[in-house]
Image (cartoon, rainbow, N blue to C red; front, side, top):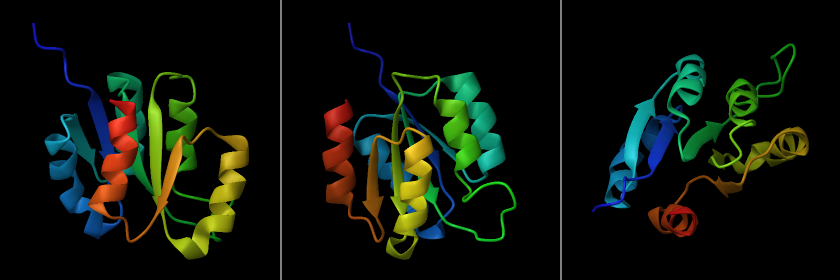
Length: 126
């Protein structure tokens, strides 16, 4: 009997990361790509993915939060078995640190991110 592939929700906001769902599939994940965080929040609740990979960007003009990612992270916090990988721009690292103080993120990688770095993280979670 073949084990069920692990599920991965790819929340893609940096256009350059649009190529990554193919890499995730090559690594053996069943991939659901999503380009909008609002839709991704509902997918987290519905799919309860094994892995979430998302882009982080800091926006100083948000009134009640630091980033695009906090709603998604809030939806994922109760899913203790779900692993969260976040890509971030190096200049936004201090904002990401502040988010990580309040919410669980299992791994972060600075952009530009290499396929090898992604593979190293995801291999540990399969």
